Amino acid sequence: MSNAMPSIAQNMDSRCKEYWEKGYTVIPGVFDAQQIERFRNECNHLWLIPGLGDDLNLRTEFRRGSQNEYVLDRLDPVLDLSPVLSSAANDPHLLDVIDTLLGARSALLKCKLIRKDPGTKGYAVHQDFLYWTWLNVAPERLCSVALSLYDTDERSGGIGFYPGHHQTLISGPSDNLGGDCDPAHIDKSVSEVPLLKSGDVLVFHSLAPHFSGPNASDLPRTILLPSYCATNETGLYCRYYEREIKRRCSDVVGFERYFDRLAAMSQPAR
Ligand SMILES: O=C(O)CCC(=O)C(=O)O
Image (cartoon, rainbow, N blue to C red):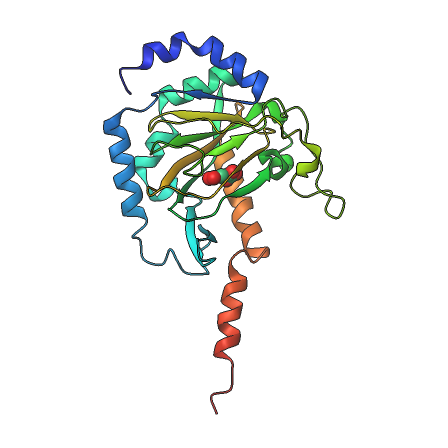
C-alpha cells in the first residue's frame, strides 16, 4: 500500500458524499508507482498467452479497432490467471475503501482486465445493474472499480458519467425496452470523464450510466475492473462466473466468428 493511505482515510467523508450524490467518485493514490509497474508488467505478460485471440476462448472479448478490425480488449475472468492482479482486486485497503463507500462489508463479485489499445473504440452508455438483476440484490449494494494503470482522460477513452442519474434502471429504446438504457432518457447536458492518475481508483454505482470513447492517445488505457457487492455471502465470485460461463456458451459469444471460419472451410475444394 502506498504512503498516501492516511490522506485517503481522511478524505473518505467527502468521497462518500460524492459517490452517493453523483454515482461515482475517485480515490487518488490507492496504489503506488511500484505496484502499478508490477501490474503493467503483468498485463503485458498476460497479453502474450497463446490462444487469447482464438474465437473459442471464453475469457476474451473483442472490440473494433481504428480500421474496424477486431481487437482483443479484455480478459474476463482474469484473476485465476494472475495472482498479481488478484492481490490488487483483494487489496485490504481497497476493500476498506469499498466497505466505507457501501457502508457494509463487501465481497468481490467479478473482475475483468480491459486493455484499450490506441485506436480501439469505446463503449455505448449502459448501466451495469441491468446485467446483475438475477442476483436479486439491491442496486445500491453493488459497485464497480476502475483501477487505472495509466493516466487516463477523455482523449485516451476514459470512462464518463452523467452525474446523479444512478437512481433507477433506465429503460432501453422502444424496440428493445429490456436492453441498455436509451440515451434519450438521460439529461446529457452535464457529463464528466474523471481524470485518473495511474494508481487512482474510480468507484461507480451499479446504476450509474457510463460510457467511453475510443483511445485517441498513444498509450494503452488499461484498467482492472473489479465489481463488489455488500454482502456476507461467501462464494459470490464463484456463483457469478459459473453462471456467466454457461451463459457465454449458450449465447455463442464470439463463436459467430468461428462459424464464419467453419463456413469458409466447408466450401467445396473441387
Ligand atoms: O473500459 C471502458 O472503456 C468501459 C468499460 C465498461 O463500461 C464496462 O465494461 O462496463
